Length: 330
Ligand code: G3H
Ligand code: 13P
Ligand code: NA
Ligand code: ZN
Image: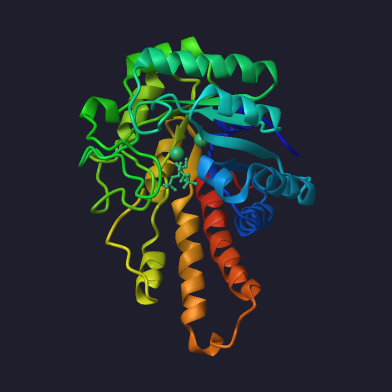
């Protein structure tokens, strides 16, 4: 059944767990997420980005998620719009039936230039007014996602600032966060703690100076009832990196956000954990492996390798539901 983000995150807070929010743009991802949720009895957050709308087209994206609700009526599901660049985009998603929208006012509409506090408050408050009138939840973002090592925003294949960010932009300011939540009435707040989008997050397994989980504790002391969202929270599985690179791929050495660090963050109010890259890597790795295996040389039915991708993605989804504690809460 379709539920709002607020309903689900309030419940998660009460029971001290978080829900992975998986990005979707095709049917195999939707299958994997739902099969895993069904296997472990977890609620689901599925989110569509601007890139997903470009790829699938809005009606296909929407109907894929609606198909998941129809096929699994017993599983609570949030249909969330990821990273809205302006209020009009959020308005269209509300109109088309999403139960949650993200207004990302941490960046200007170009999704490259960091915004100032007043701009962010204004656009986010506007979306909250619209969304709440329709029973739809709102996620806002304060602070910029980016590397505390390099000041770069990451995201090699999508949005991201060209210039360097300074340290103060890369960690959500606690005083501003209190003010932002009060002024905008968001249901969930995405925070900056050193994570970034895409596969290239950290050059080594991250330590506390580049992945500031402790900053969540500071934020939670000031905002004890706010639901925090971690973006850029793929773990960049080293086994899939290896499989991709031993089957014709060439991805540089890189590290993601360790699952145990996310689990630590859940103690400090993290309730939604955004994951896209991990499913992309599992999908690519499993398809590369299948197609380069000489015993599959004669295969030309794509369902054969799509099925491998679905299985690989399902295993990751299931592991995240279990680790974040949402398993058993459908
Ligand atoms: O926000 C970042 C997500 O990974 C979405 O990426 O815009 O390429 O679909 P995308
Ligand atoms: P990853 O690139 O780490 O999977 O993050 C996805 C994300 O934050 C989508 O909003
Ligand atoms: Na989002
Ligand atoms: Zn994101």
